[in-house]
Image 1 (cartoon, rainbow, N blue to C red):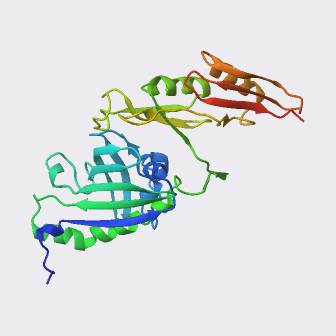
Image 2: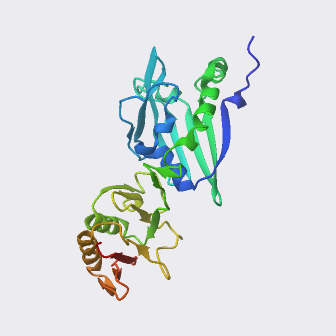
Image 3: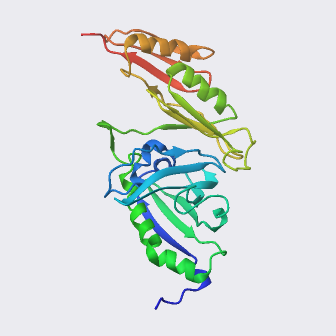
Length: 304
């Protein structure tokens, strides 16, 4: 006989403390390149690519292989997105489990991922809430039938995400620059894309369902490539970028011809502090403050 199950028990919550920044943990939940931890580690990795449309109303979808006989897509529909702080999604996928085929959408559980700053660590609080449209017996069957234990095992794997590990592809991971721009994030991040190349993704305040800034302002933007940068338009009351006593070093990060090209592009409408040229100690370097206020140190050692 099943234990009593009251209406107040229509949810369960797990809390974990992770030795990583909120940005890293948020990336682990939202970047397809870092979502491999969500797969069943006891089964082969699915060949179906992970899909993420990171906006309110957008979907996250990836294949879950339970065993040799059972496989289905899962993921969610985003209901709320606060970068580096909070994700809320209706759990499931069309043709998957839970089923989100339109008619059943409101019966799907809602998952909240809250990220709390603990200094060098992040507290992850995951809550799964079942809708009032399901009766008590149905909810009890789902929770005790494996849903709770499945989520417990799943979030224990967040630490395995490549967004949190200390090494990625054999190279030490380093801090990524995240810039709060004074309403110029779209122009700035496109500028850096033109300088360094790479792939740029931009999401507006409207995409994330936020009202603390203009709807078309950038709530989260990321440039991935040889040089990785991220940023957003500052929300109301938030400070914007101002670098003093800090240089972003590109020393030895590319061939000399490429570094000279980057330096020239960064100089357009910016301010050259020190031309990129040979120095008395044998190396070549230079400094430039670009038109968005970032101070760059660019240089290289002489060829052997």
